[in-house]
Figure 1 (cartoon, helix red, strand yellow):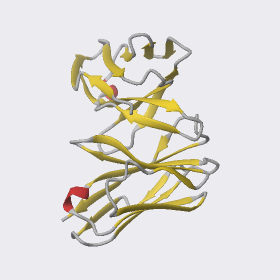
Figure 2 (figure 1 turned 30 degrees about the horizontal axis):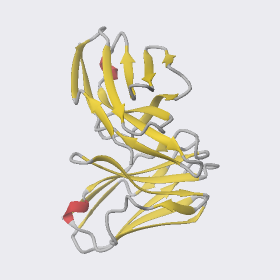
Figure 3 (figure 1 turned 30 degrees about the vertical axis):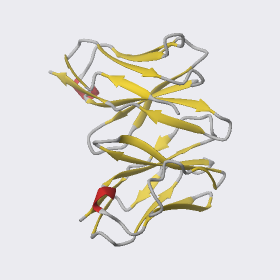
Length: 114
Length: 113
């Protein structure tokens, strides 16, 4: 099955700096890569996703890049703010037709220091 | 849109007791997923349904766990008998169709004493 590795496990940045979180996946058939943000005690919330026919996607301060050849994808947050502090999870899945099974990375605790 | 609704939000019970977690997916969503989240193992998919039919339950840890989806607006995850190692946050998620993003509920924090 799919295996997703996520790095780093913790990341501290100064407010205003950029943060980058990286994930690798094992199954070359994976074709959908969402990122979720989870604040303490709350549910994971989808913040951005990318499909395998696209190399990069941006949404305001957040961008995701995908390298299918190397089987890795990254989340980039620019101009970080204290409210960006949370655990971020990457995931990979194969659209099998019957449903999309997400395999999650282990998470990155991002702390934005004021 | 009320989002995915889970109940209860918190459950504390003694080992050996039966535990039932409930989920109401977003109206119109036809795929439903049950996840378990722990510090040690992260977010794990337990089972998912498509059009009320269980598609893959390979993530269910053992026979003590069972899940049902009797109709499009309700699903249960049952643990019987419960054990302390079942303590975790259980999330339900739904999606409009198999290829659309999954939306999570607020979770049930389960503690087995």
